[in-house]
Amino acid sequence: MYYFYKNEFVHKQDIQISPDDRGYYFGDGIYEVFRVYNGQIYEGAAHIQRLERTASEVRLQLPYSNEEIIDIINRLIQGNNLVEGTVYMQITRGEAPRAHPFPTQAEPIVLAYCTEVKRPLTTIQNGIQAITQPDIRWLRCDLKTLNLLPNVLAKQTALDHGVQEVILHREGTVTECSASNLMIIKDDVLYTHPANHLILHGITRAVVLRLAHALHIQVKEEPFTTNQLLQADEVFITGTTVEITSILRIDGQVIGTGTPGPTTQRLKAEFEKTFL
Ligand code: PDD
Image 1 (spheres, rainbow, N blue to C red):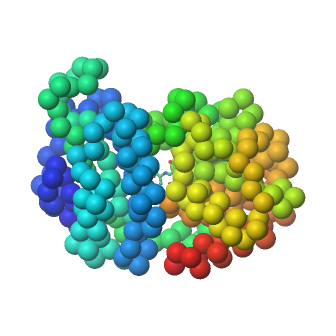
Image 2 (tube, rainbow, N blue to C red; image 1 turned 90 degrees about the horizontal axis):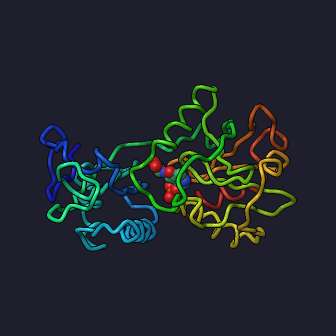
Image 3 (cartoon, rainbow, N blue to C red; image 1 turned 90 degrees about the vertical axis):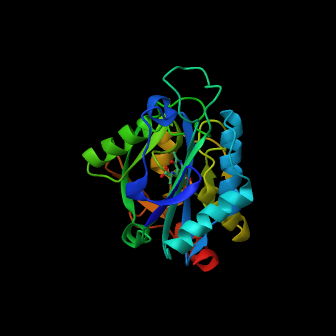
């Protein structure tokens, strides 16, 4: 496996990372996780658009054009013979002695590499369980930054409870999950939190909303409560790595029939038809 670091393709063991990288001191950086199916980048343009938006919102100058970024990713895919997996790319604000203000001299640093990852077929087919927790993150959850400590803590809490995901809420209003977006079906209507500053504007979230429109499923991008969540007919998460995965039990309570619901199954089938 070879990596991309500081403008060149190198072997992992040859990468030397400075302790002065602001990614370490401040989490001062941004990232994307791209999915690769059949050696091709899934929804590449949407990922690049989100990366550009995050970069601009945190005032980080991307060192490459969109075409150059896509080229780096494709060269990692081809150079590593990746057929099915992910490409991780992060860009930090650069290296400088620790001080809060933006450094005047530092150049942004790009790290990118790919990982072979199979589709999580067991959970996609059989569903998962989740718990609910207060959403303790900041008010710019739409930005894909390296500051993931609240997400890491939430995910670990799920694992400590023997379940796979945490559903986050702000004073009873459901936002999203620790590493995925959340959707519910009630009386044949799909509800999901609006794409504002409180959630990540997930690439697969947008894909699923597109598929729902194509399947004539009514969509309401509006907030809903944890009570509505527990009363839903179907609940599922969306994300680059989890695709569309049903949640069958929340805080120990069975959702709907306790099996992946019919609308979720239609969306999954349409997703597979479109992308695989
Ligand atoms: N996470 N919400 C959060 C908080 C996420 O971290 C992610 C993805 C999503 C889903 O977004 P998308 O459909 O674009 O993958 C929603 C990635 C995979 C990660 O941090 O590893």
